[in-house]
Length: 104
Image (cartoon, rainbow, N blue to C red):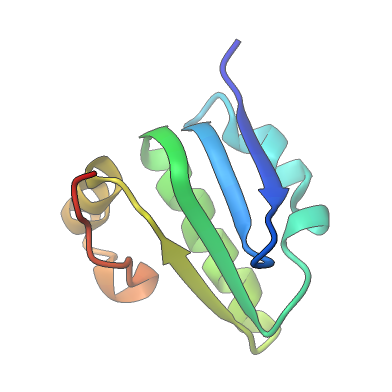
C-alpha cells in the first residue's frame, strides 16, 4: 500500500517521505492538525518524496493557504524535478515558490 509519512525533524521541519499523490493525500491531510501547527515559518522538507501528482500539488497549495490565513510563511525545500515540472505546467510557481532543484 502506498503511503506518505511525516515527521518533525531536529530542525523543526516537517519531513515528508513516500508518495504524495491522490492515494496518500487524504490521510496526510486528515493528520494536518498534527503537522501544520507550529513556528512562524512552516518548512516542508520533501527530500524523501518519491512521487508527486496533481493531488499532491493541490495539497501543497491548500497548505500554503492555511499557513497564510494564520499570517505565517510556508517554505518548501528539496522538491524533486517532478514537482518542479508539475508546478510549472500548472502555472502556480508564484504561489508555491519552490527552492531551486539540484539533481542529487
